[in-house]
Image (cartoon, rainbow, N blue to C red; front, side):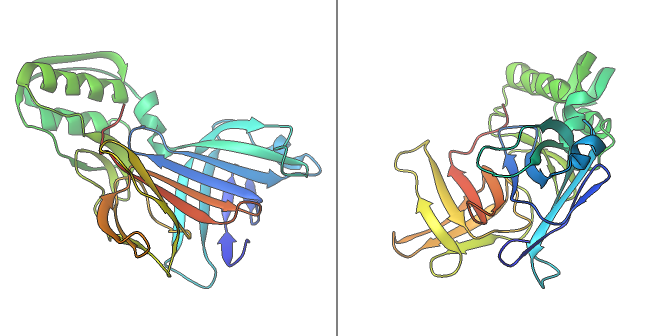
Length: 273
């Protein structure tokens, strides 16, 4: 619990109700979301209890509020000791990967003949076992397409290359991500409410882009529920800026040392690499 915040996290069998540091990072240009949590462990019991690939469920929110909460789920990717140099205590640092990891671990061997590309993409995404919320790509009919022992993420990239080279479509702004209702592959954003960051309410700092193609950064008090590809409205009175932007990257930080914040990077809209 840090300055008006409650933390409710589970890492393997360990329940975490306080942490000196928690970070969750969403990048539109990356398939995977990542997290970091520092867990006090003076007796070494936490380190002995958790292992790679254990389930993680990280939650934080404003104290006394039922709707202003953020949830992230994934699995343990690494467990680091000794502790962070600035922690000043015995602890373990757990790095996590989001549930969309299945895009990079599910192997497909499929052959499609005379099927629409959009239908093929939906079937590929469904192979992960996750819900498919939307596929927004051209529906050109593929005469023949083979995926031989590749991950779902790689198969989607191969399909993107086919649509680009053989049918002339520009999919550079398309991204694949796990949204609130399931997997999406689209050039558009994540549907939902527009988050507002404005002077004298929740804006902490703002560095707008100067030239085309540059990324701006706006720092706010924590905005639970915000992920990349969502719309954010910025009202910066000091710089006389009012803009509706898409979040290309979102970093939530809950920290005793650094404070609590959400950083939003915006500007050049790009797809996943």
